[in-house]
Image 1 (cartoon, one colour):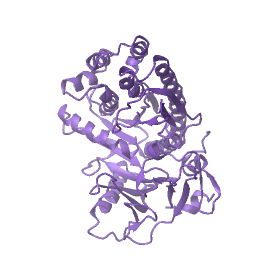
Image 2 (cartoon, rainbow, N blue to C red; image 1 turned 180 degrees about the vertical axis):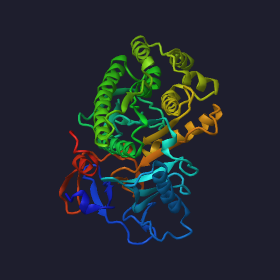
Image 3 (cartoon, rainbow, N blue to C red; image 1 turned 90 degrees about the vertical axis):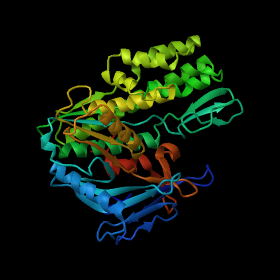
Image 4 (cartoon, rainbow, N blue to C red; image 1 turned 60 degrees about the horizontal axis):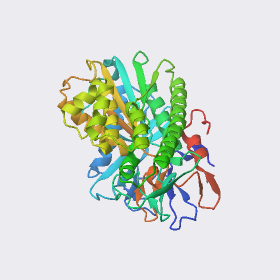
Length: 436
């Protein structure tokens, strides 16, 4: 495999095969030499472009690079600048929407970033008294966790937009090894956290919140359980699978974050674990044993009784709190807490470092922050979303996240040689190469 230094600005793309038994293929594309958006070969709705000489009409790309420069100026980072290319990805569902990830060069690492909250950024990070970073990673992937019904078909319980399962579930299949989605997200985001920490003033108190779901995943099975499609023993087996996976992913993430913070010269930074929906764990275990599932209002009441004032605030704002929304609300609570809304809010710089698919949470948290009466002179909330190490294409050429199109640990290159994708991620981001 080519070394990092020999592949600056390279775009890595995995194309999923038409036939599931065939291996996914890893392609490498050098950055373009000019600013005309160049279609990524084999893709539908994905382009790459160089930053220099940006044509006036390409406003989205120009804005993306301007936000990178603004971010560097805000942090006063001398060793931070724009990278060699931008990646443009069109939404499969909304063709009018395109996300732009502008190249950014940090000390010793490279990312393609989509940045929120930097458009009207004023002042500098020296204005803050403390910084709160929030980052998370989901569990499993669609390939890595499968619910099998009595007909041998897979039920799509992890997709919010999937039709409800109609047949009883008979088994749950998961792979023992972490998914590429989990490992790549842990390594990439930990490196991003370290890069951001290195830019912050060393005098600034720093806390990183690790928000990995656990009980949120219990909720995916409850509707099917309540409709009599899941036996109590299978539900309890699923809960144990989730608990075990949570421990592995959470602990791996914390280790990588700690290593990245130490490398950034911030061994003093605190690393905190978000409680998520932990107060509901015991009652949900009891519920699948007795068959008596609490109503949505009772679940919310338990969260409010846990003492976090943000839950009560969001209840009064009528934020949706149905069973499928509770997990979403728990993530909002952490973003709002990081913005200082659970205390006086003064002097707090909040930064969400996450995958781009979570950027909608950041937008909603910003809207809720305004509804909760955050002062106009509060410090900014920033969202920093690094593009995945490898872009994954469906067989039809449309881009999808690793969570939805996880190819597994191995692919083949264009010459047919096997590529260990975990090692590829390590070579690009690990600090030093991580322990798998």
